[in-house]
Every structure is written in structure tokens, then in C-alpha cells.
Length: 239
Ligand code: FPP
Image 1 (tube, rainbow, N blue to C red):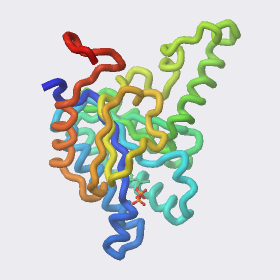
Image 2 (image 1 turned 60 degrees about the vertical axis):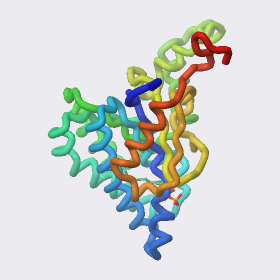
Image 3 (image 1 turned 135 degrees about the horizontal axis):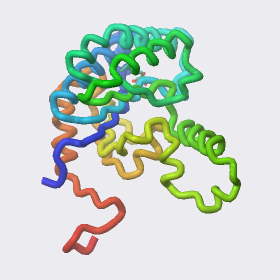
């Protein structure tokens, strides 16, 4: 076995709309079931010993959807932040955030700030909620922070990877070992572009609302058999 459980897993929770459409339901019903799946998988990930879990809940591109759908997802996020505190406390889960915070509705900003503060001392799994998140946007924001922090132009001629990493949304969080995508699409959709450079990808055909602990276990089992070379070669092998 090459790897055991990933330290950090990211999930692109896709297929809520299709799940609903296949049942003749409105798309929002799929998001409602998607939220339930997110709760199931958070619990499963914590039980399985994952240390960091990043959930892609809303991308910088998702604003293009109808105002009804956007409003519904924001409502779910609101509900999630309000109702999950007991669960976080029981499981010692620390909640964190990634994304363009300023672009969120102010009441959600407030809920996120409170949840982060309330769970800051918990030492269990860390859940990073990627809401209004885009990988390119995160890199741009990192650059802006970098230029504010270091005014000297000469800094840029000797720019190193670490200079950017330091200004990402959660610089202390290790890069994801595994990125999971539900619903069968083979793309990363602007998720953790910088951090995911060497992540193992796992695509499942199953739509997100149908996800259960067994699906996460299957993803981990698949991951545990991968040989990670990070661009190098394995010792004693030619490639
Ligand atoms: C992708 O499915 C899903 C989303 C854009 C929203 C995901 C949001 C939640 C599950 C609720 C919030 C969760 C948390 C943890 C706060 P899609 O609509 O693109 O599905 P489709 O590709 O089948 O249309």
C-alpha cells in the first residue's frame, strides 16, 4: 500500500441538478439533498481520520445561475452555518473558509465569522468551506496581498513559489492529497488550482446527493493504491 488515508481531501460536489432532474424535481431539491450528503460525508471523513476536508460549495462562476437558484443555495449555506454548530462541537470540527469573503452577502459573512471563532480551538478535522471560491481568483487575491505586504518591486524578480503560497487563503493547510469529483465530469472547474498541482484525482459517476460513507471509503481505497511521485521517480525504478 502506497498511501493510507489522505491528510487533506477536497470535494467537488457535482450533480445536484441532474439528481433532481432525473426525478422530475426542481433543481433546488437536488441542492437540498446535496446539503444532506455534505453533512453525511463530513461525518464520514471525520470518522475515517481525514484531517482537512475542503468542500466546494459555491464557485465564483456559480453567480451566473438564476437568481432563484443562487438565492436557494445561499439559503442552504446560511442554514448549514446556523445549524451545524452542535455537530461541530460534538466532533471537535474546526470550520474555516476559502474564497472571496467580501463578495458574500453580509449576513453570511457574519455567520462564517462567528462559526470560525466558535470552532477555532477545536482540534478535530478541519472543514474548509469554499464559498464564492475560484482558484484563479484566490491566486489573484494572493498576489494583491503580496504586493500590499511587500512594496519593493525587486521582490518580484526573485519571486518563489513560497511567496505565493504564503498569501493564499489558508497558507497553513497542507495541499490536498486527493481531489474527489462526483457526477462523472473529468475537470477541476477552478478548484484549488495552486494547491492541487499534485493532487490525486478521483472521479465518481455517482451524483452528489447519492453519496454515502461507502463512496468516500471507495475513493480512499483507490487513493491508497496510487503511487505519488510529485514529478520525480520512484526509488529503484526507471519512471
Ligand atoms: C453542483 O451541482 C452543486 C452546487 C453548485 C452547489 C453545492 C451546494 C451544496 C451541496 C449546499 C451547500 C453545502 C455546504 C457544505 C455549505 P450542480 O447544480 O452543478 O449539478 P448539475 O451539474 O447536475 O447541474
